[in-house]
Length: 85
Image (cartoon, rainbow, N blue to C red; front, side):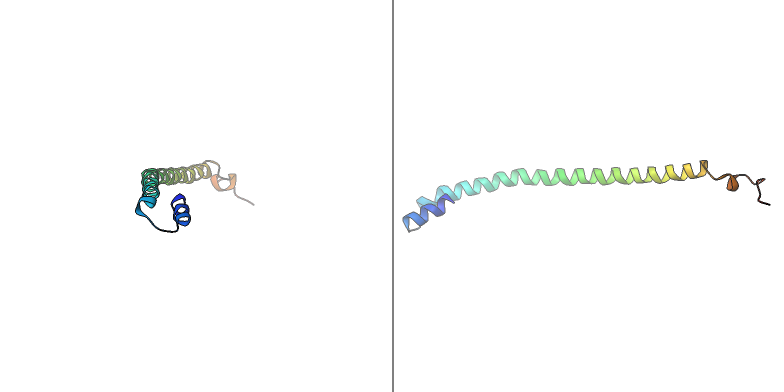
């Protein structure tokens, strides 16, 4: 932004006037990439771990519900001597 202000003020494009602005923009880009690339890998890693944990929890819930359904069957289904008349 400062570079564009200098160009607008002077009315001409001079390499010496725009070089510092270009250098600072490139430096900001490098810093942004240094931060963004590791953040992307960390995000992907954590997202994978969360999906794995959710899958394991879902398997546990399904197995738990199946065990509870076996353990707490209604009396009519579990007792063969209890027949309706």
